[in-house]
Length: 76
Image 1 (cartoon, rainbow, N blue to C red):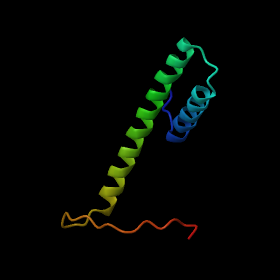
Image 2: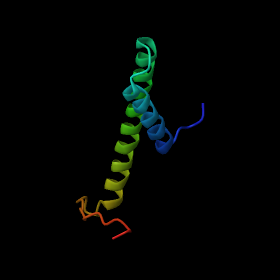
Image 3: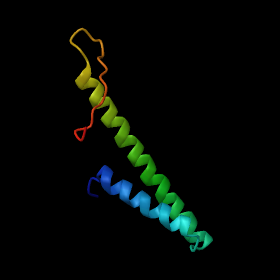
Image 4: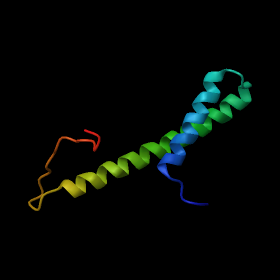
């Protein structure tokens, strides 16, 4: 099985939500879609937590303190 990317999982999750919100799925198909959505949401959550930990490591000072800085998107 290929390693899934966050962006791919998020797109799949968005598609599942659209299907469920459409209200045209049978109960069985809705349950399958819901299960898939939960799986994708858990994957996305895990990836976001991993990214947060990587950022914390990168911001950690030599003395062990963390420096927090205001995030500034490149667009600003």
